[in-house]
Every structure is written in C-alpha cells, then in structure tokens.
Length: 292
Image (tube, rainbow, N blue to C red; front, side):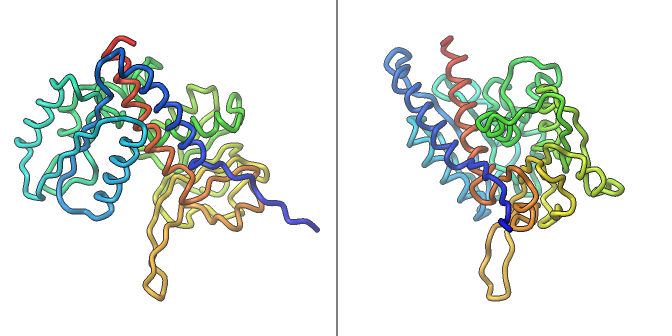
C-alpha cells in the first residue's frame, strides 16, 4: 500500500518570488521617488542567533534594493540612548522601517522601546497602534510571522472561510495576531496553549492547525485531523548526543506528514516568510511615505 505524504508549503520558494516582486517595484519607483526604501535594524548586545538574523536581513535587503541603516550597540547601552536613536530615525526621511532585534538584554524594557517607534515605521507590526488596527480590521503594518503564514496559505489557495482553525500559542508576536488574521479571513478560530485542558481533542478538530508554542514535538501525529493543513511556526534548536545542533519545529514532522494534507517544513517554511514580510512591510511603508 502506498504511503501518503503531505504536500509541502514551501516558504523558501515563495519568499524568493516575493523578493523578485519587491525588487521590480523598487527598480521602477526609485528613479521617480529619488531614493530607495530604508530599513534600520537596531541590535543590542552580542546574542549570536540575533546577530545571524540581522546579517541575513541586511543581505536580503541588499538583494531587493533596500538600504540598510543597521546599528549595533554594546550590551550596556541604556534605554535613554536607544530612545534618542529611535527618535532620530523616526524623523529621518530616508528610513521607512525601524526594527528592534529581540530579545534585548535584561535591563532594557522591550515593550517601552517598541512604543517609541513611529507606528507607520513599525515594520515588525508590534506597536499597540498597529495591533489595534488589526483588531479593528483597519489598514496598517501587520506582524511579520502571522502575515507570512497568511500569505503562504493564500499562495497555495487554501480556503479559510468557514474552516475550523486552531492556533496553539498565544504570544503577542504570533499567536494573538495569527488568530485575528484568521478571523478576518472568516475562519472559526480557537486559541489553545500549554495550559489548555485536553489539547489533543482541540487540535483534532482543526482543518487548519497552526503550532506556535515554541515547544519541540508538542504536536504529535495523533493530534492531527486527517487531511488537515498544518503550519509549524516553532523554531527550536536541539543538540544531539554528538553535540551537533539542528532546528526542529513544534510538530513531529515525519509522522504528521503521513496524516496531513499540507505541512510546512522547519527550516524552510515560515522562517523565510517572516523575513519576506518584513521587507514587504518596509516597501509598503515606503510607498505610503512617498504617496505612491
């Protein structure tokens, strides 16, 4: 008997397609506007994972024609110093997007810092104003990871209207905005989390299952409805007995691939989409700032 295997939702391929579209838009508009879009990424401290993310973002910006205004600060940088830098970037007409790379060193209040960013330059979509716009269904910059999930589902023409969607995880980065975006697309949405009773019964009802709890292997194949669309937002770095590290999601990939209709890989699924949406937000902000 032939073993069924899920179709992959390829975020890496879609991200490349988005970059080509953005590069074409920038190439067309830059001569008319007189400048390229600009993105400022602020990185504090020497977290190696964050540094790798920031380098990746800068490299991708260069590829599509966005100017990077990246700034690196030592771990002991004060809130007041960063506040002054953000205030200056808010006024800078060359800068369309401002992003503070998280996590920040413990002495800095990341929420208070995010609130210093001008909402129309908040390309991470995390400012209370932008989250409020999402709640109200108004136009605004959307949180990159859930926006990337929505764009990927759209690319594969996966119907959401009237479907049962379950989001496992309730972070402000992913879970909460993800639920709101699915609701906006007329799905019936349940939010579950690590303290939900009988998680398995909840997830087995999902036509669309989105795991964003940051717990490796949380979702096993028996928790997945046959034929479901399963999106793994989790990125967990595990080290094996030989000391080699590798990335896994929140879902048992191999077993779930035999049950689900569609499945995102880790890596190569939602990770690339998050960066693509960050650049998309930067270009949207550029178009708005220059009335295009």
